[in-house]
Length: 195
Image 1 (cartoon, rainbow, N blue to C red):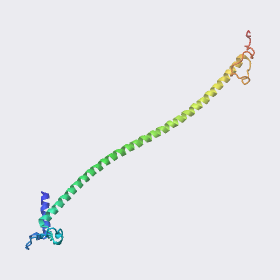
Image 2 (cartoon, rainbow, N blue to C red):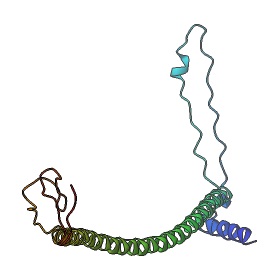
Image 3 (cartoon, helix red, strand yellow):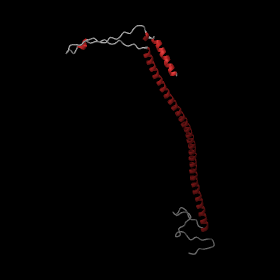
Image 4 (cartoon, rainbow, N blue to C red):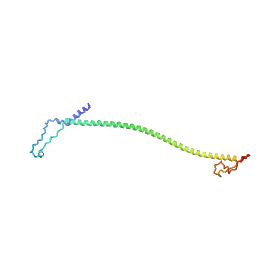
């Protein structure tokens, strides 16, 4: 209904602008047909000598102009409708992309938070590992010192039981052991060991 009303309004506007030139009181003159006299046979150039009158240019009537404008209007409305559809689809795509962007931003923030927590945990684990290494190395040193003290006390016990002092650095044997061939027989106070 709106389309028909617009077409009528456009036709009326076009008629008003055109001034109703198609309805003038002057009579239209018929176009003069071109006549060519028959040339003599064998003369092929007779067509070039004969003047030909072109028809006078046709004036567009108001109806033709109105139809032309109506066609242009319909083309324009089709273009507008197509552009509106394109705009609507682009707007829809943009809203989808914005939603995806928001979701990705949320995921990125979560990933950053998790990465930060993991980094903090790794730093704590590294520090714990370093402390453990220090403790183990310190424990090794403590074990060496304890073994050294144990060997010294064992050496003292052996000397007290044997009654002799065995030099620890004179032989290559470990401390607390004696070579039976070179060592004198050990005696306890009051008892003699048979040979």
